[in-house]
Image (cartoon, rainbow, N blue to C red; front, side, top):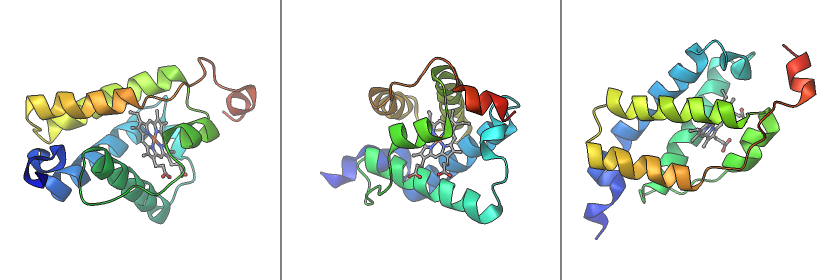
Length: 132
Ligand code: HEM
């Protein structure tokens, strides 16, 4: 029953919001990833956080549908490489530790995201490198 969803076992909206928060802070604090957020004001960051939270709510079978372009379209558009993705995946795991998600729920969430891992390029597109 709905009682037993991963969303509820994780601790619901509050915990999901903390995961999204912690994860985004880590990405923005990483010197090799922060450029992806260059020029984002507070309003834009809030929108990203909300999109991320609703994505997490949906994949944990919580009470909200994610409506958006999706992981692959978004990450391809902004030029995320598979190496960036792996780094981010580590930050997501760390975020789950930070919010003290129980171990089996942590594993389950990471597995669900891993299963949706988009096929990203190894190398960043040249025009993105030039922008640095
Ligand atoms: C575990 C890996 C990742 C997950 C699960 C994830 C998840 C998401 C989701 C769900 C969105 C919202 C898409 C939407 O607009 O509906 C998003 C947006 C975004 N992500 Fe990630 N992401 C990951 C890795 C990364 C990496 C490596 C970067 C680069 C630092 C990144 C930077 C961004 C940015 C800048 C946006 C906002 C794009 C925009 O403003 O439209 N993400 N991400």
